[in-house]
Image (spheres, rainbow, N blue to C red):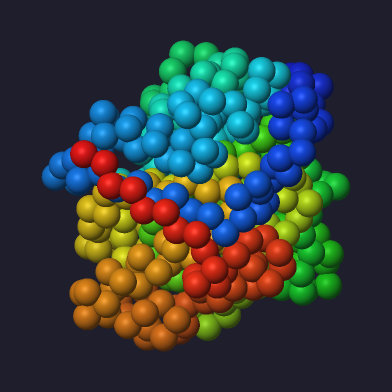
Length: 365
């Protein structure tokens, strides 16, 4: 069900401080207790004819969580991050519908993991920014009874994306960058406000991203799923094919303290992936069965690996890497800006030097 105003108020009371007995000293958040570490779990049977398979996905999630935390069983791994009393958001990515979105099988495994750690169903929320995309992707239909869902806003059509009902007026990223129809001297138009869901409703967030090309950013995996999913006024980051500022916009948003503090885990669904045509319907021409999921607390490291995987596939298909590719009919921006990953690394959000990333590859099945 959708959260109403009374539920918002209850959530404000329920969202406890991040510190807790179980997680004390673990430095949960970004880049988290495992900076520079990425677990890649491959299962040859995880995709059949482009469709996720339930048992391989279950095995991949369990193994990935154990390898990331060093736990002996999956429940212990989930308890490393979560405990009774937590209010947890799962940031899904339905933007590439109908071809490439967060899988229902994966979100159900995350929910099961949270429950095994003692998190109550009524304290688990699936979230995405746009209500229309959330419902259009059918995410509400995937959720077990008792798990709730939230959207910050309806899809905004006026180009400004400055509706405020679902956003916190006190928490924002300000940058000298405005949308095409904006008023350049208006401070409100220079700001992207953070969703109340993140600032007031939850105390921990799991990102459920995908491995996907993005025309303006180059890739959308973990960092962009956060930067463009939790704030408004994002159209100003890529106004036109030449007015593109994703390289700075993405890391500047995720650098906000509320992101650093509350984003504790990244589960990246790369069972199906897209090497071009992103982020929306054009990806249908460029899908491949990557059959790999990634687990990390460091969003920069997992984006570095994910972007490298996309570039590897592009090379296999005779295409230029993201950083030097020219525009075409399915990717119109004059230049993509994957440097957002490196900038995020410089800001201390994680490790962007691939030679310094501890990538652990596991093959199941």
